[in-house]
Image (cartoon, rainbow, N blue to C red; front, top):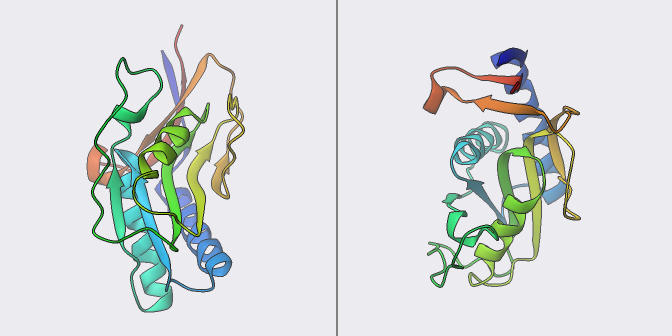
Length: 174
């Protein structure tokens, strides 16, 4: 397995700053905004985006972590319990945050998980990497990097909080 770093920590920081500006601009501030990070790395990326927006706007939007595992369509049994939220999502602008957009199935599961939490005004998607190969009609509204890959290649995002460093790597399993 050959692995190559394609984005370093500084590149990730620049991408997250750009995404933060774009989210603020599209939502006209942070007043009605909630960020929901898809576990595991999306949770940390959402926290960083929220922190950067707080630096820019002087206030912080709520951030939640969402485990979509029970809502995936490749799980033997669908979830019956909905996640519990501190805020009612009705009328809120939601930004789902994930590390890599690939087939779109994770995002579909996340939207299924949101189903019982009210009716948001909008749901947008922010991803650090869009690698293509979408199987569902899902696209990201905010993208850090577009990295076209073959199906034999894989993207690995590392975050300081979990992995001890920030990087985006590409590798191919032989």
